[in-house]
Length: 68
Image (tube, rainbow, N blue to C red):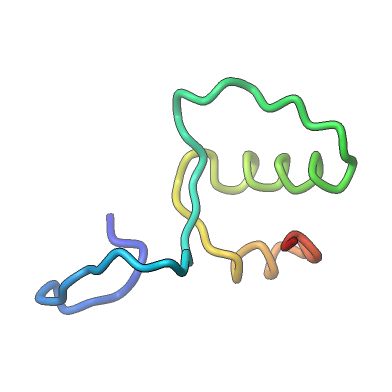
């Protein structure tokens, strides 16, 4: 599954900027203490599970102030 549109003929380069994120399927349960972080983790789990997502989609779900 492509998380971005392309013609299929493009080239992907590793860069310093990250635009898509996803939870590791094998990761242990996160022990999150901060209420805002806990809410964000819950939103990600509920809406995306282990599928890739981008910050724009978090904005659309009402999440804000998640960047440090």
